[in-house]
Image 1 (cartoon, rainbow, N blue to C red):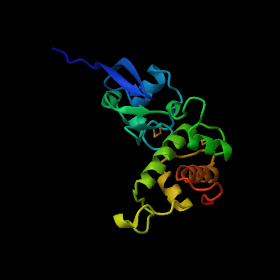
Image 2: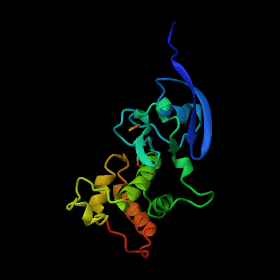
Image 3: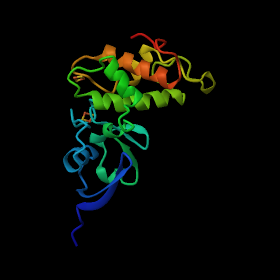
Image 4: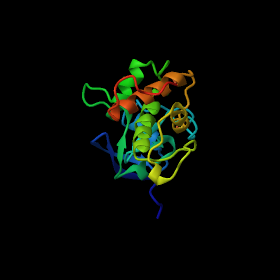
Length: 187
Ligand code: FES
Ligand code: FES
């Protein structure tokens, strides 16, 4: 008996269910773009190096080019198409727009998905490689430009829009924390 090389799965994406049959080697990125027409998620390197394909899997960021679609079954996938609340942009999307956090825009969906997770990870007290005091009782470190740069370092931007990206992440984080406008860190 020859083992099947494809499976019927149901992907849960942005609150909707997508049944499809996939070859077991199909990445989540290719399933999103080529099978489901969710082309907001971009393919850059296709080998886990650039972050253009970043999506959230059960709320945590991942590079979808290194995830098999079959392994995503039963998990909640959030792509850039699922960030806005109807006509209202996610605060991170709005900050990127307001502060010109992009030029060509190719890396932007991945940057925004990553930034959404960065803000949540920071608020939950996760340290980064540049966090000085990693004791749990120290609480979240200030979300400085250095912290943002480190936490966003998996997302490359060939246009070099990094200064504005850091400012946009800082503004969105401050807004979500309820800080008054203008109190975000400078890049
Ligand atoms: S396309 Fe996935 S990390 Fe570059
Ligand atoms: S805005 Fe062009 S690659 Fe980042």
